[in-house]
Length: 298
Image (tube, rainbow, N blue to C red; front, side, top):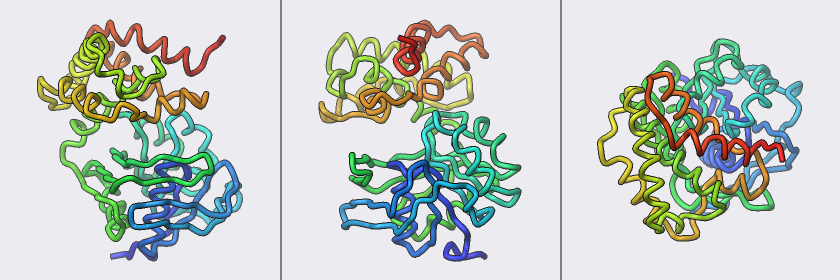
């Protein structure tokens, strides 16, 4: 069995999630190449155990790639996937495993055309990390990654097994992925209002969120997710249990004027609903508004 310390490992996208992965690998003694858009001398992750500094530099020129890696963690937002094509071409080959650390349920379809026949392993990521203005990242708890039982999953596990990251291989990945998608979809309401989690304490917002989540549930079940009847209520209660000032990544992107992940988090509900003949009246209103908020014009 190949040791994680001898496998060639790369992280593409040193944002919040990418910095977490790179730092935990470095802490565990696994060398890691970090590729991004902006040059940086190092990465810094502040954890409850102290700071982890990953020596750089962050590489920005795919021509400097040392060749195909054994494992590549793709940690950019879904809106940035196409922009990583040159790096993925440089780092991926037929023997590479690409672990996609992105929101949504369509990671394989979006990344597979860019990775030269590599195995693509989608991951569900729960990581309480926030990126600061200076580029450092604060991790407020232990991250959890879940992947499906597919080819390449065990290699990802070997790379992460020595890190402070909880890693599981799920037999019913579809259900877990759609469960997270319901939460991500509802968070889109925060991007539209410019408000944080406290807004869900309003009864009118709660009613809208429940109507939307029930619509999402119907689509998820049509896509073979085994979610219970009360899943929408559970998601709403999670939002209502958050601190009033708790934000979300799509809200942070809206506040910063960055493109929103409205397609993989929200439009997918309408798209899959149409495929299965399921009406999506709430999505039919929310999706154009999120798209306009993200992309304009105006």
